[in-house]
Length: 359
Image (cartoon, rainbow, N blue to C red; front, top):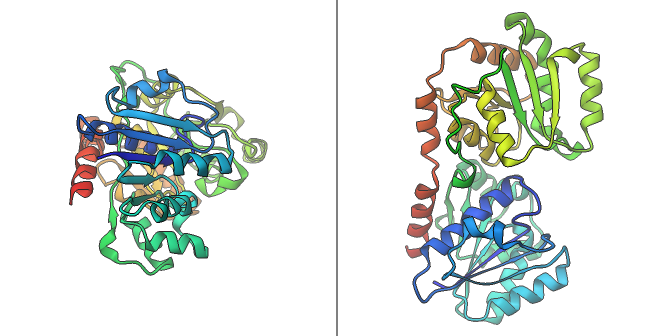
């Protein structure tokens, strides 16, 4: 099937949405027949390097693409141009759905689908968004929670709104790193997040506030925070306020290989976020055999089981401290945790997408 993927970006940042949409691109290319083509248009990427593309595309499948450098008019023109001869548009963000609707209106017989990630669809919609949503052939929701929130805010045929969980990127899996040989000399809680003032719901401040109690139950524990953003100074002040300066480390930005080492050397991964539509980062930790601590909110409970981690009420710092200490002291089965992550492998995702596209 000739298809066109629309994305806010694929390679400019490494947040969850670009990571998940890279796998949609890979799956569309893998599923394309010998005479089919795949195209994509990204809004925010300045350019796309062939070295970045290589792991996610097949040469015979990828036909054309355009990166629009944040130019919305250019993006719209590129979508209308590259939709010629295409049977399906996969739209990677609801903000771009009206453009997909416009392309479908101009080209009868062209269908479009939306990937609904999380917080961006947990809200009321504008008139144009509602109209575009009602015209969508399918809406792929990353979790049942996201599906329910979407249906609360717009009246749609529930049969067209389906759950298609995200998957582990095979390019980001442990890659032969042996967690047993890369261990810290003391217990380490790892948190990976954007440290933005707009993303305070991630719960990084709650982890810092929990550290005094964690240290009482698990002395010597380190909290290692990976990420960057404009909220870092507030978080550093919070560390000083709670007098845990020697127990909290800010690692800043790390590349993919460095991140794999961070996962390998930690004891527990924690991100007690309120609004994760799915939580790819939990899967990445689980693929290294590491247990996860998350808030009992959003889509996280659909990823983390009692075999792979612990859930706590969002914002309950004492409960978070107790869970962290318990996770640090509990003997976890790393192979069982990896098996839990395997339920969300790329081959499983690709086959699920194939069934939905051919149903």
